[in-house]
Image 1 (cartoon, helix red, strand yellow):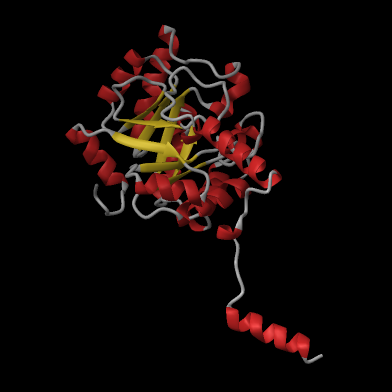
Image 2 (tube, one colour; image 1 turned 120 degrees about the vertical axis):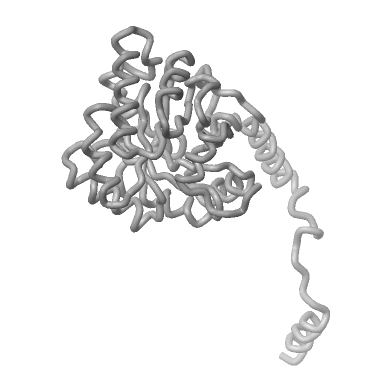
Length: 284
């Protein structure tokens, strides 16, 4: 595993050489440090933290302040992976000026090395404006969670000829606007294959089949920490949720039964200090 910092040119080279890009979400220092040490290429501080970490119903309530806070925490735990900050709802849709200001905060305050923006054709000018001032942008099309209400929930996109054409067109214009990569979320694998072939920039699949240049999932999902409900495309690699629950139940039981802490987990006074205390007591 290379120890040098991953930059956007490395991701492009991986696509050109046919090497798969690995990406995961990260929301705090501890997880980011472990993800980075595992050799993952890219860590997305996703606005999914609203649901995964903050307990919101969806991603729409996440604020810029919350995103910057979590990007800063992730950045402190990372040495190698590229750190991408997700632009939350209404932080870039109002105007190009607002997008520049908020993306600037993500980079300057949070330490992100790039930002991610949801949307296709209508986001082209915003992507170009950010790239023009030196902020790398990752695009995101298909199922875009910030359009939750417009899409009618978390639904697979690109099943009709019309939406397939629109998604292919969106990918092309986002690439032409200067994005260094693009997330394809919840679209049929055949369509993802076509988009990946047409794009010269890397595609990162999230429920888009095996032919994308890379893959990203929510870390808590693949570790069994997100509860019983999970998307079809998520594979659980270890049920840490159940294991963690068992550990905490053991802790509770041992504390209540006075098994923990015993003497081996307790501090003792040094003999000289004990003697000194005794002498002080006797001299009173």
